Length: 286
Image 1 (spheres, rainbow, N blue to C red):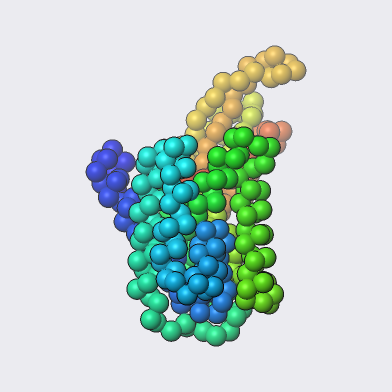
Image 2 (cartoon, one colour; image 1 turned 45 degrees about the horizontal axis):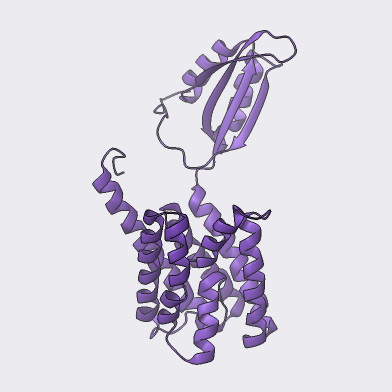
Protein backbone atom coordinates (compact mmCIF):
# COMPACT_ATOMS: atom_id res chain seq x y z
CA UNK A 1 0.00 0.00 0.00
CA UNK A 2 1.26 3.48 -0.88
CA UNK A 3 2.15 5.61 2.14
CA UNK A 4 -0.40 8.35 2.68
CA UNK A 5 2.35 10.79 3.68
CA UNK A 6 4.12 10.68 0.29
CA UNK A 7 2.41 13.06 -2.19
CA UNK A 8 4.42 11.85 -5.21
CA UNK A 9 3.47 8.21 -4.63
CA UNK A 10 -0.17 9.16 -4.01
CA UNK A 11 -0.22 11.10 -7.26
CA UNK A 12 1.38 8.21 -9.17
CA UNK A 13 -1.01 5.66 -7.70
CA UNK A 14 -3.99 7.85 -8.51
CA UNK A 15 -3.17 8.04 -12.21
CA UNK A 16 -2.30 4.35 -12.42
CA UNK A 17 -5.75 3.52 -11.05
CA UNK A 18 -7.43 6.01 -13.40
CA UNK A 19 -5.59 4.32 -16.28
CA UNK A 20 -6.67 0.84 -15.16
CA UNK A 21 -10.26 2.05 -14.77
CA UNK A 22 -10.34 3.39 -18.32
CA UNK A 23 -8.93 0.12 -19.72
CA UNK A 24 -11.55 -1.96 -17.89
CA UNK A 25 -14.41 0.35 -18.94
CA UNK A 26 -13.24 0.30 -22.57
CA UNK A 27 -13.12 -3.51 -22.51
CA UNK A 28 -16.71 -3.62 -21.25
CA UNK A 29 -17.83 -1.30 -24.02
CA UNK A 30 -15.98 -2.89 -26.93
CA UNK A 31 -16.10 -6.58 -25.95
CA UNK A 32 -19.76 -6.66 -24.89
CA UNK A 33 -21.94 -3.57 -25.22
CA UNK A 34 -21.19 -1.72 -28.44
CA UNK A 35 -21.00 -4.77 -30.79
CA UNK A 36 -24.45 -5.81 -29.54
CA UNK A 37 -25.88 -2.28 -29.91
CA UNK A 38 -26.28 -1.90 -26.16
CA UNK A 39 -25.33 1.51 -24.80
CA UNK A 40 -24.21 2.98 -21.51
CA UNK A 41 -25.69 6.09 -19.94
CA UNK A 42 -24.32 9.63 -19.92
CA UNK A 43 -21.97 11.15 -22.47
CA UNK A 44 -20.61 7.69 -23.29
CA UNK A 45 -24.10 6.63 -24.35
CA UNK A 46 -24.63 9.80 -26.39
CA UNK A 47 -21.25 9.27 -28.07
CA UNK A 48 -22.19 5.70 -29.01
CA UNK A 49 -25.50 6.88 -30.54
CA UNK A 50 -23.96 9.77 -32.48
CA UNK A 51 -21.07 7.61 -33.69
CA UNK A 52 -23.54 5.00 -34.96
CA UNK A 53 -25.62 7.61 -36.80
CA UNK A 54 -22.68 9.48 -38.36
CA UNK A 55 -20.16 6.70 -38.87
CA UNK A 56 -17.44 8.85 -37.28
CA UNK A 57 -15.06 7.39 -34.70
CA UNK A 58 -16.52 6.86 -31.23
CA UNK A 59 -13.21 7.86 -29.65
CA UNK A 60 -13.45 11.30 -31.24
CA UNK A 61 -16.94 11.89 -29.85
CA UNK A 62 -15.92 10.67 -26.39
CA UNK A 63 -13.38 13.48 -26.19
CA UNK A 64 -15.24 16.24 -28.08
CA UNK A 65 -18.59 15.85 -26.30
CA UNK A 66 -16.91 15.87 -22.91
CA UNK A 67 -14.84 19.04 -23.52
CA UNK A 68 -17.63 21.58 -22.70
CA UNK A 69 -18.39 19.73 -19.48
CA UNK A 70 -14.70 19.58 -18.59
CA UNK A 71 -14.56 23.37 -18.94
CA UNK A 72 -17.57 23.71 -16.64
CA UNK A 73 -15.93 21.32 -14.19
CA UNK A 74 -12.74 23.38 -14.25
CA UNK A 75 -14.67 26.55 -13.43
CA UNK A 76 -17.06 25.12 -10.84
CA UNK A 77 -15.36 22.11 -9.23
CA UNK A 78 -11.61 22.50 -9.54
CA UNK A 79 -8.43 21.91 -11.50
CA UNK A 80 -7.53 18.55 -9.96
CA UNK A 81 -10.92 17.01 -10.80
CA UNK A 82 -10.77 18.42 -14.33
CA UNK A 83 -7.28 17.01 -15.00
CA UNK A 84 -8.24 13.59 -13.61
CA UNK A 85 -11.37 13.53 -15.75
CA UNK A 86 -9.52 14.65 -18.90
CA UNK A 87 -6.89 11.94 -18.38
CA UNK A 88 -9.60 9.31 -17.87
CA UNK A 89 -11.63 10.37 -20.93
CA UNK A 90 -8.61 10.49 -23.26
CA UNK A 91 -7.41 7.14 -21.95
CA UNK A 92 -10.87 5.63 -22.48
CA UNK A 93 -10.97 7.01 -26.03
CA UNK A 94 -7.57 5.46 -26.81
CA UNK A 95 -8.48 2.02 -25.48
CA UNK A 96 -11.88 2.02 -27.19
CA UNK A 97 -10.07 2.57 -30.50
CA UNK A 98 -7.44 -0.05 -29.61
CA UNK A 99 -10.04 -2.70 -28.74
CA UNK A 100 -12.29 -1.92 -31.74
CA UNK A 101 -10.82 -4.60 -34.11
CA UNK A 102 -11.42 -7.33 -31.52
CA UNK A 103 -14.66 -9.27 -32.02
CA UNK A 104 -17.35 -9.35 -29.34
CA UNK A 105 -17.06 -12.15 -26.79
CA UNK A 106 -20.76 -13.08 -26.95
CA UNK A 107 -23.79 -12.40 -29.12
CA UNK A 108 -26.20 -13.20 -26.31
CA UNK A 109 -27.72 -9.83 -25.45
CA UNK A 110 -28.39 -10.64 -21.80
CA UNK A 111 -24.85 -11.90 -21.22
CA UNK A 112 -23.47 -8.87 -23.05
CA UNK A 113 -25.56 -6.48 -20.93
CA UNK A 114 -24.57 -8.24 -17.70
CA UNK A 115 -20.84 -8.67 -18.25
CA UNK A 116 -20.51 -5.37 -20.08
CA UNK A 117 -22.27 -3.64 -17.20
CA UNK A 118 -19.94 -5.30 -14.68
CA UNK A 119 -16.78 -4.23 -16.52
CA UNK A 120 -18.03 -0.70 -17.13
CA UNK A 121 -19.11 -0.46 -13.49
CA UNK A 122 -15.70 -1.58 -12.20
CA UNK A 123 -13.90 0.82 -14.55
CA UNK A 124 -16.08 3.83 -13.77
CA UNK A 125 -16.04 2.98 -10.05
CA UNK A 126 -12.23 2.99 -9.98
CA UNK A 127 -12.14 6.31 -11.80
CA UNK A 128 -14.64 7.93 -9.43
CA UNK A 129 -12.88 6.45 -6.40
CA UNK A 130 -9.63 8.08 -7.46
CA UNK A 131 -11.04 11.50 -8.21
CA UNK A 132 -12.09 11.45 -11.87
CA UNK A 133 -15.16 10.94 -14.02
CA UNK A 134 -16.10 9.67 -17.48
CA UNK A 135 -19.48 11.34 -17.67
CA UNK A 136 -19.98 15.04 -18.30
CA UNK A 137 -23.60 14.79 -17.15
CA UNK A 138 -22.32 14.15 -13.62
CA UNK A 139 -20.49 17.49 -13.73
CA UNK A 140 -23.71 19.24 -14.80
CA UNK A 141 -25.60 17.39 -12.07
CA UNK A 142 -23.12 18.54 -9.40
CA UNK A 143 -23.48 22.14 -10.56
CA UNK A 144 -27.29 22.00 -10.84
CA UNK A 145 -27.53 20.33 -7.44
CA UNK A 146 -26.33 23.59 -5.87
CA UNK A 147 -28.92 25.64 -7.76
CA UNK A 148 -31.99 23.40 -7.81
CA UNK A 149 -34.03 21.22 -5.51
CA UNK A 150 -32.92 18.00 -7.19
CA UNK A 151 -30.14 15.70 -6.03
CA UNK A 152 -27.16 14.69 -8.19
CA UNK A 153 -28.61 11.18 -8.54
CA UNK A 154 -32.01 12.48 -9.68
CA UNK A 155 -30.46 14.76 -12.30
CA UNK A 156 -28.20 12.01 -13.67
CA UNK A 157 -31.18 9.64 -13.78
CA UNK A 158 -33.19 12.20 -15.78
CA UNK A 159 -30.39 12.50 -18.36
CA UNK A 160 -30.02 8.74 -18.62
CA UNK A 161 -33.75 8.06 -19.06
CA UNK A 162 -33.67 10.45 -22.03
CA UNK A 163 -30.50 8.83 -23.44
CA UNK A 164 -31.73 5.26 -23.02
CA UNK A 165 -35.05 6.27 -24.56
CA UNK A 166 -33.16 7.61 -27.56
CA UNK A 167 -31.44 4.23 -27.85
CA UNK A 168 -34.87 2.69 -28.36
CA UNK A 169 -35.50 4.94 -31.36
CA UNK A 170 -32.08 4.17 -32.89
CA UNK A 171 -31.46 0.49 -32.08
CA UNK A 172 -34.96 -0.75 -31.20
CA UNK A 173 -36.78 -1.03 -27.90
CA UNK A 174 -35.43 -4.47 -27.06
CA UNK A 175 -31.88 -3.04 -27.20
CA UNK A 176 -33.03 -0.11 -25.07
CA UNK A 177 -34.26 -2.54 -22.42
CA UNK A 178 -30.97 -4.46 -22.49
CA UNK A 179 -29.23 -1.09 -22.18
CA UNK A 180 -31.29 -0.45 -19.05
CA UNK A 181 -30.13 -3.82 -17.66
CA UNK A 182 -26.50 -2.90 -18.40
CA UNK A 183 -26.97 0.51 -16.77
CA UNK A 184 -28.51 -1.02 -13.64
CA UNK A 185 -25.69 -3.59 -13.33
CA UNK A 186 -23.04 -0.91 -13.86
CA UNK A 187 -24.72 1.37 -11.31
CA UNK A 188 -24.61 -1.32 -8.62
CA UNK A 189 -21.04 -2.37 -9.44
CA UNK A 190 -19.90 1.28 -9.30
CA UNK A 191 -21.20 1.49 -5.72
CA UNK A 192 -19.47 -1.76 -4.81
CA UNK A 193 -16.19 -0.62 -6.35
CA UNK A 194 -16.27 2.77 -4.64
CA UNK A 195 -17.26 1.44 -1.24
CA UNK A 196 -15.02 -1.64 -1.26
CA UNK A 197 -15.73 -5.25 -0.43
CA UNK A 198 -15.17 -5.30 3.32
CA UNK A 199 -18.49 -3.50 4.07
CA UNK A 200 -17.31 -1.60 7.12
CA UNK A 201 -19.84 -0.57 9.74
CA UNK A 202 -19.66 2.36 12.10
CA UNK A 203 -20.99 1.55 15.57
CA UNK A 204 -22.10 3.96 18.32
CA UNK A 205 -22.83 2.55 21.77
CA UNK A 206 -24.36 4.49 24.66
CA UNK A 207 -24.00 2.54 27.87
CA UNK A 208 -23.54 2.93 31.61
CA UNK A 209 -20.83 0.25 31.32
CA UNK A 210 -18.99 1.95 28.49
CA UNK A 211 -15.50 1.31 29.90
CA UNK A 212 -16.13 -2.42 30.28
CA UNK A 213 -17.55 -2.70 26.75
CA UNK A 214 -14.62 -0.73 25.33
CA UNK A 215 -12.14 -3.08 26.97
CA UNK A 216 -14.06 -6.12 25.67
CA UNK A 217 -14.13 -4.79 22.10
CA UNK A 218 -10.40 -4.20 22.21
CA UNK A 219 -9.63 -7.60 23.76
CA UNK A 220 -12.06 -9.80 21.82
CA UNK A 221 -12.41 -8.03 18.47
CA UNK A 222 -9.07 -6.27 18.33
CA UNK A 223 -10.80 -3.03 17.38
CA UNK A 224 -9.90 0.43 18.58
CA UNK A 225 -12.62 2.41 20.33
CA UNK A 226 -13.06 6.17 20.62
CA UNK A 227 -14.80 7.40 23.77
CA UNK A 228 -16.98 10.47 23.30
CA UNK A 229 -18.42 12.41 26.21
CA UNK A 230 -22.11 13.28 25.97
CA UNK A 231 -25.07 14.10 28.16
CA UNK A 232 -28.50 12.56 28.48
CA UNK A 233 -31.15 14.85 27.02
CA UNK A 234 -33.77 13.89 29.62
CA UNK A 235 -31.72 13.06 32.71
CA UNK A 236 -28.98 15.64 32.03
CA UNK A 237 -26.52 13.03 33.35
CA UNK A 238 -23.08 12.67 31.70
CA UNK A 239 -22.82 9.71 29.31
CA UNK A 240 -19.94 7.97 27.62
CA UNK A 241 -20.51 7.17 23.93
CA UNK A 242 -18.32 4.55 22.24
CA UNK A 243 -17.52 4.74 18.56
CA UNK A 244 -15.80 1.98 16.60
CA UNK A 245 -15.54 0.63 13.05
CA UNK A 246 -16.00 -3.09 12.45
CA UNK A 247 -16.68 -5.37 9.51
CA UNK A 248 -20.05 -6.85 8.64
CA UNK A 249 -18.89 -10.26 9.86
CA UNK A 250 -18.16 -8.89 13.33
CA UNK A 251 -21.64 -7.45 13.96
CA UNK A 252 -23.00 -10.56 15.70
CA UNK A 253 -19.98 -10.80 18.00
CA UNK A 254 -20.21 -7.09 18.86
CA UNK A 255 -23.90 -7.47 19.75
CA UNK A 256 -23.05 -10.42 21.97
CA UNK A 257 -20.33 -8.41 23.76
CA UNK A 258 -22.70 -5.50 24.35
CA UNK A 259 -25.53 -7.77 25.52
CA UNK A 260 -23.24 -9.55 27.99
CA UNK A 261 -22.11 -6.31 29.60
CA UNK A 262 -25.19 -4.08 29.31
CA UNK A 263 -28.46 -5.48 27.88
CA UNK A 264 -29.96 -1.97 28.08
CA UNK A 265 -27.26 -0.29 25.98
CA UNK A 266 -28.34 1.85 23.04
CA UNK A 267 -26.56 0.71 19.85
CA UNK A 268 -26.53 2.29 16.38
CA UNK A 269 -24.92 0.47 13.42
CA UNK A 270 -24.43 2.34 10.13
CA UNK A 271 -22.65 1.79 6.81
CA UNK A 272 -19.37 3.67 6.44
CA UNK A 273 -17.16 4.11 3.38
CA UNK A 274 -13.47 4.75 2.73
CA UNK A 275 -12.09 3.92 6.16
CA UNK A 276 -8.49 5.17 6.33
CA UNK A 277 -6.19 4.19 9.20
CA UNK A 278 -7.15 4.06 12.85
CA UNK A 279 -7.56 0.29 13.11
CA UNK A 280 -5.95 -1.84 15.77
CA UNK A 281 -4.16 -4.87 14.32
CA UNK A 282 -6.05 -8.08 14.87
CA UNK A 283 -4.78 -10.34 17.62
CA UNK A 284 -4.88 -14.09 18.03
CA UNK A 285 -8.13 -13.97 20.01
CA UNK A 286 -10.15 -17.02 20.90
